[in-house]
Image 1 (spheres, rainbow, N blue to C red):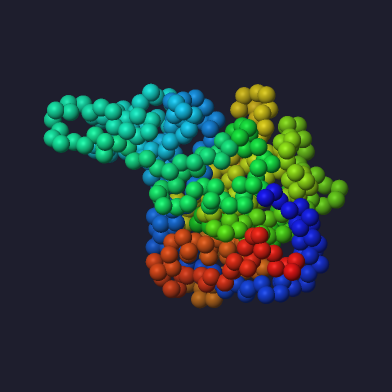
Image 2: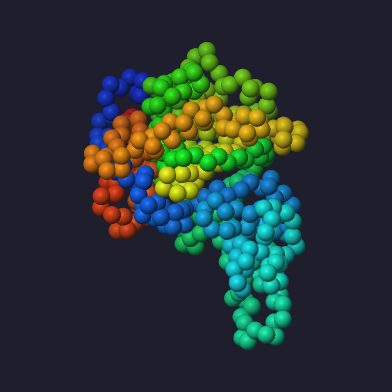
Length: 412
C-alpha cells in the first residue's frame, strides 16, 4: 500500500514529544568494532552477503536500444548487461566459457552477438553459445551446456538489479512494501542524468551509516542539511530484509534547495515527498532519497576492509535536453568532486576509519536514533549465516518482527 501519511504525522508528533526511547524498544548491544576492520569479515560480506542480495547495477538509459550493452564490475565479478530484442535486459557473466576471456572488452557499446576476442567463440544475448571456431577439434563439446553464465536480472521501472543467487526470492518480493511506496515516483519514466564514482578511505559501512541516522546532522551538516530537516521529529521505520526508512519534516519557512525548483517535478509525488526529507536504505548497500524533483540513489561498494567506492546517481523527469544538462544532486563541476554535503560525510567517515580501535572490547554503542544501523548489521548476520561468523564479531538479533513494518508499537 502507499505511504500512510496520517500515521507518519502521528509518529512525528510522538517523536517530538518523547523524552525517552519507546516502551519495550530493545536495548541495542554495542556493535563489535572489528566488523569495520576485520579482513575475514570483509570477505564474508563480499563473497556471501553481496552474492545473495539484489544489487542496483544499471539504468535502462545506459542501454536504450536492443543490442546495447554495458559492463558492470562493482560486485567483484565481471558482468555484462545487454538489452535484448524483446525489450528485456539480461545479465551475463562476462567470461568466455572456453578460456575465461571477457567477451565484452569495451565498457559499453552495441553488438548483435558477443564474440570472444581471444578464440572467436560467439554467444547470443541470452548467453547461448552460437558458434565455436574449428569445432572439429573439440571432441564431445556440449554446445547447449557451454554458454555464458546467465545471472538473475530484474527491473523496477528503469532501474536494473542483478542477483548472483538463483534461489533468492524475486526483486519485488525482497523489496516488499517499498515497491508500492515508491510507485508515486514514476521510476519507469525518470531519466538518468548523472552517474559518478568516488574512492573513499574507509570501510563501506562507515560511509553508508552516515545515511542511516540523523543524530549527526546538527554537528556535521549545521549549515547544509540541518536547516531543512527537523531531526527531533524524525521517524525511523524498519522493514523485513534489512531495509529501512527515515522521514523528517522540513521546518516551517524552509523549502527544498532552490536549485531544484528549475527542474520539472514528478507530478505524482505525494505530500511526504514535498514536505519532508525522506530516505530509504535498501539492504545491503543502497540509499534512496526521494523527493518531487530528483531521485538520487547512492551506493556504497566494498573495496577492501578500509576503503570503499561511493557511487552516486541522479535521475529526474525529462528536462527536455541532453543528459549533460540535467540535474546533478551529488557532484560539483560536472563530477569533478562530491557535493558539499557528501564531502562533509566523507571527511568524517575517513577520520573515523583512521582512529577506529578494532580491539575496543566495549564495542560501539548505538542510540534509539541509530537503530537503522543496528537493523542493517543484524540483517547482515542473517544473510551471511551466524554459523559462519566468529562469535566475537556477531550482533544479537534483538530488533524483532514486532518492530518491523507494518507493525507500529509506538502508536499502540
